[in-house]
Image (cartoon, rainbow, N blue to C red):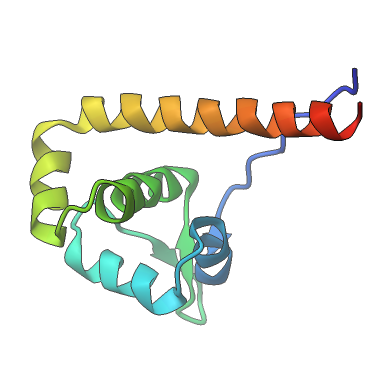
Length: 111
């Protein structure tokens, strides 16, 4: 069985990297940033947004609530304010299942 190194977590992500990770347009990331108060990315001297790993986690939560749970922005904001722990738990489960699926696909392809 092949050894898989855990990817190194970056200190910050550009808006382009975030949009690729979430598979949404850059304009969507900007819109979410303007609409949801928990998103406060830093900016460099040029004014480019720099998303910390915590910002990326919050964006993943927002993506999950909007795209997979079908919530509105207002509903997602309310849910994040009231039930943040529940969303974290479901998101962790989803990410674990995706990792397991990836491992199973790798195993199937190597047989």
